[in-house]
Length: 104
Image 1 (cartoon, rainbow, N blue to C red):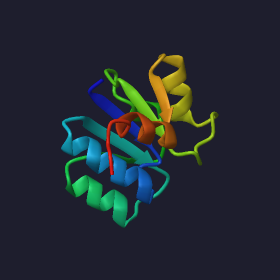
Image 2 (image 1 turned 120 degrees about the vertical axis):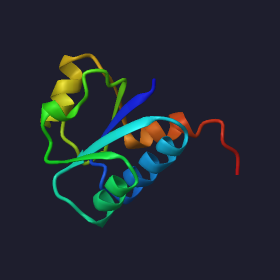
Image 3 (image 1 turned 90 degrees about the horizontal axis):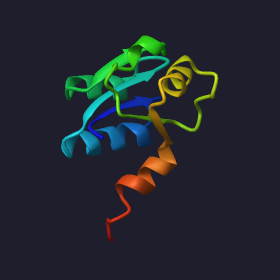
C-alpha cells in the first residue's frame, strides 16, 4: 500500500494523519468540500488537494481510501472506492492501523 486518498482531508485529525503518512513515504491526495487554511497548507507541503468530492479525484492506482467519519456512504468518492474495490478505512481505523506499533 503506497498511494492513499483521504476524503475530508481538511479536518485537524485527517490533515495530521496525512502529514504523518507523507513523511513516512506514502503518496497522498485528498479532498474536502471547501478550501481552508489546512487544505492550503497541505497543498503547499506537496499533497494533491481537490476541492469538491468527485469520483475522478481518486487516482486509478490508489491503494487505500481513508475517510472522515463525517463522510456518508453515498459520497461520490466513497462510491467510487467501493465500485473499484479499493480498500477503505475510517479515520479512527487508520489511526489504529498506522500507529499500532507505537508506544508512548
